[in-house]
Length: 288
Image (tube, rainbow, N blue to C red):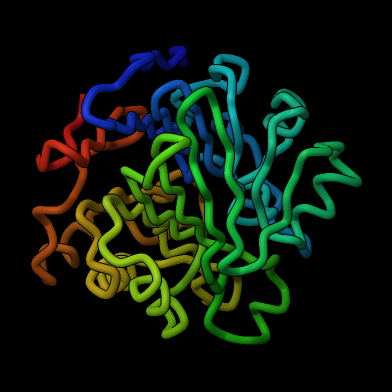
C-alpha cells in the first residue's frame, strides 16, 4: 500500500532528501521546498500511451499514490510521454503547481491539460522556484530520445535538467543532473563543461525498445558511458523495469558501472526507497 512520504522540515548540512517512487518519478525535498520529476502514477496493468498507436503496459505499482503526495513547489517534466506524464497525474495533480518542461510539452500542458503555470524551457535556459529562504534553479539540458533521426522525428522533444538547490541569498549547495529519456551522443559532453562535478546524476535507463528494434533510452552500457563522461559524485539509476518496453535490467547497468570503475558512486536506492544527499559533510549519499 502506498505510504505518504515524510521528510524532515529542516535538513542538516544542506541535505537533499529523495524518494524514488518508480519509473522516472523522484520526489525531492530541500528545506521546505519540494520538487517532483516526471509524474507517473499508473497502476500495474494499466497502459501508457507513447504516441503513434504505441502503448506500454505498467508492470509495477508506484510507491506513492498521486493523492498522497505532499504539497509541491514544482514539477520537472522531461517530455510529454504517457510513462512520464500520465492520466492519473493529469487528473489529480494541483493545476496551480509550476511545471518546467520543453516548449513542445508546455504548449500542450497549458492549452489542453489546463496547467497554466507551465514554463517551456529552451536548452540552457533556467527557471528559479523559491520556498521561504531556499530555492532551486532548474536549467534545461540537451537530450535526444533516439539516435536515428527518423525515429527522433516520431518522438516528442526531450530535455535533461540540472536542479541546483541552495539558499535564496547565496550560492547553490547541491547540484543534480537528471538525464531525461536520452541516449548517449556527443552533445551531452557540453553538460560537464558547463556544470562540472554534479553531486548526483539521476540516469534514465531501461533500454526502452520500440518496434523495429530502435532503442530510445539508455541501456546499461550507455548509462555507464554517460556516467564516465560526466563524472558525478554519486549515481542514482531510475527508469528501469516498470514498463513492458523496457528491455535492459538494472543488473546490466550495475555490471557496466563496475566495469568502468564507478560502482563505488552508486546510490543503493531501489523502488520506493529514500536517499539523503549531503554535500557539506563530504560523505557519500546514504539510504534511509
